[in-house]
Image (tube, rainbow, N blue to C red; front, side, top):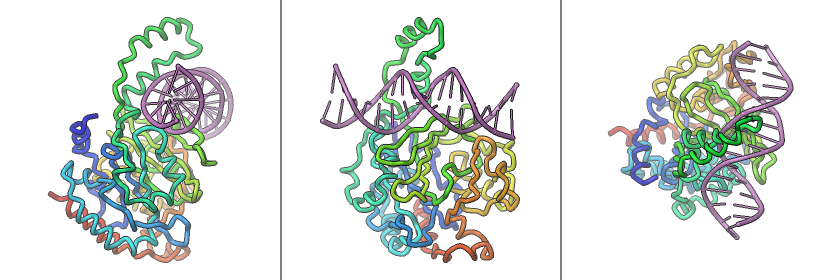
Length: 356
DNA sequence: CGTCTTTGACCCGCGC
DNA sequence: GCGCGGGTCAAAGACG
């Protein structure tokens, strides 16, 4: 709520780069929902062709994201990163999806939906960071506790003594505190499937039509107990080949060990898993799981992909990170290997800053 | 039988 | 205050 609180939150270990393999060409965008309400966009899709999504870092203003807050806490020194962007944007622009800055005001109107619907807008108008940002990032957010409680207050229709409960519960309903919103991170992934497997188990709890978009938005929640991580999955309206996955919150657990053949159990995905583990449970594994080739046995194995809750078969996922990281022989049918050296530089550039 | 998805209804915050 | 839209709930059904 208060800026202090938000700062605190930033200091909590939400560091998507934590333990991240700096050598990979992943290019995360930090959200700083807490500050600006913009979910960071992890563009885990390298652009391989002339897809319309090819946009750029050009014009991307890191200060807008204040992702550096994640790295440095509140002491924002994003100059270096900004430079990194400036230096590299032109080169990587061909490979990375446009960073979509979610001008989310912490509430409804312009969330990822807007992101999805305005792929280009974002990049076209990145230079108005603050003006487009509502600082009410935490408002209207679905804080795990409060939201749920309030929702649960809702009386089941079939409840008999519901009337009473309903009333009493309504009475007991905690006074509206502004709901806190977890930090959110968005990933853009070029994929034919919507729900990308990430090693965690998710339960779909809702689906809503997105305004101005033919594609619905799906809501998932981590099935692990006490893990309040949520994610929203939707397809970009402007580029239907792009799936936008927005994570909210941090996993307070590791990859489900019992997952049937999930990525965590395999190699080289195990590498991924360990990286992910090193990253902390909060790191969105979608991001990583797309970086490495799926287990060879998993390519046709829904279970491996689905892991139960995931229920996704992302065998058709054409994530370019994955492509670019795949062994050369596996890349043959893929596109040109992107020049992600710059990305590396980029990443390491600000990672560098990250280190105290 | 347990788990997950679907889906309509509801809640909530915001803008007008 | 009202309407809109996002987000969530939870019953019912599907699936393995």
